Length: 424
Ligand SMILES: Cc1cc2nc3c(=O)[nH]c(=O)nc-3n(C[C@H](O)[C@H](O)[C@H](O)COP(=O)(O)OP(=O)(O)OC[C@H]3O[C@@H](n4cnc5c(N)ncnc54)[C@H](O)[C@@H]3O)c2cc1C
Image (cartoon, rainbow, N blue to C red; front, side, top):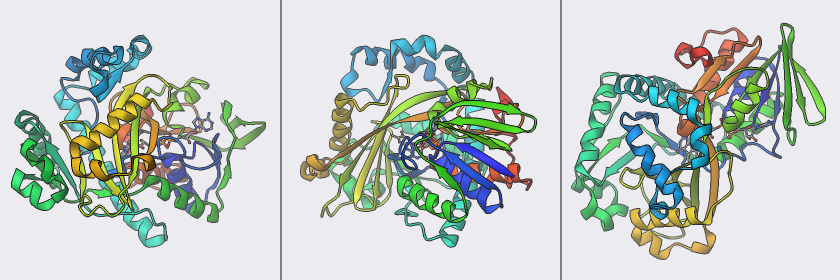
């Protein structure tokens, strides 16, 4: 069997690896000159495995006017989220589906489904670490979520109670316990109202992982065609033809793993994948000899920032800008990200080498209901593995292993039905 995959981000690479491991002949078609140069390049590095929240929080409708006002210039300087006016109309059908999934029952159910997939991903990643020598700065460090308001903390607990009934491990921690376990937060201790600790969450550098996995996949025979933008697809009962750059590639099956662009790619053969691009930024800052480096992943719910240590650098991730496919780096948003560092780690901000900050912007492929789209698309021989939004690192290996099993005729270890692209 021969399978073509569009996209060499986390989802395409993991799918290629597991298919090749199952004995399938795989060709990956990627428009960039190497693997993982888009969303999978500079993400937060956080394996949010115990509470992989969707963005469809109940009550989100009330926040939309603020995001829109911020994009007009309102409080833009300090806005974690922006919604550009031009996107309001363009996002309408997707947005209505998004809001439909933003009721408490659906939200809780979808986070629990993502959690099952995330737990399976942890298993797959542990197996990969045993089988391969990929060094991706992995840390089984846990995650500490900090809250600056009691109301926000209390608002989080019902979801955790629900997940706890399904086996999630979490603990409530008070200010003293936070400062004891995380000395880097002492300078902002007075502003903290409490936190939640997820001891089983993990961290790792997804770009280093992607590079290593691409090499492993090559060794298994996967053919990588870089610099090959896919411009057309034709599917029939006998297989799929893909126009990639100047060449036409013929395969028995196709997997669309084109990240935020999956919707466009799929639309060319009449497949509807309700995915919107949600732009995020990150900064990578050398830690130098700063002694108080964070021990765990820190998520600050007050300012919507993720702080993580990847190797010798600090990775700060945040923002959700609904501005279409505009992936350029806006200096104003970089200033905002620097202010996040000043807000969460003021002592580090005083000594960090600002000239060495590496900024990044990427488009998260956000599905309308917060679940990824994994499985058959309805067009014969065409599959999807996309729409992972802000959880694409947390869910990558499990999504790919389950889909590869499905395509190669094995029984997936998890039920893929809730993630079917045909659910919309
Ligand atoms: C700032 C930021 C922080 C994040 N933090 C986290 C985190 O801490 N934890 C977490 O779990 N997730 C996080 N995420 C989300 C995660 O990074 C993404 O969900 C994941 O990288 C998506 O992987 P992908 O393979 O679907 O997409 P991508 O990595 O974008 O890959 C898609 C690939 O398809 C290629 N492509 C597209 N169209 C075509 C075409 N026509 N022809 C050929 N190739 C094409 C692109 O060039 C690209 O290489 C974050 C994302 C961002 C942006």
